[in-house]
Image 1: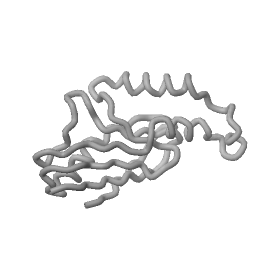
Image 2: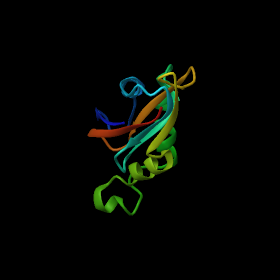
Image 3: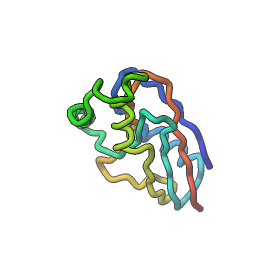
Image 4: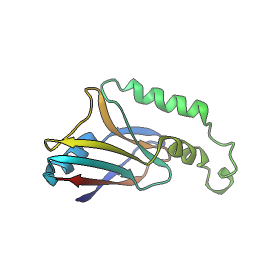
Length: 133
């Protein structure tokens, strides 16, 4: 089973918890055991798994990426000014895979599936693919 989730971002850089949207796709699939793949269909966005209890961790991640990869000093910036977003997304990666057991995502207590916007605001698409029994 495969479903596309739509996300509208409101900032140039932000992390959005999409765990509930992904869980809804898993429930709909009725897969008891398997894998859930979450894939961002964009070169300037990423998918990560991180804590969702403290919003400061999201701000800390954005701040640390900005410190490592500053805006406006890359060759690609001459084209459209978003080279930093491409680099950040490449480092974080476009996808994550989460095991499914008893028709539920097997995330740890503090884990959440996060959409990482690095060049917004934009309307984005994420593919959720479910494989299993």
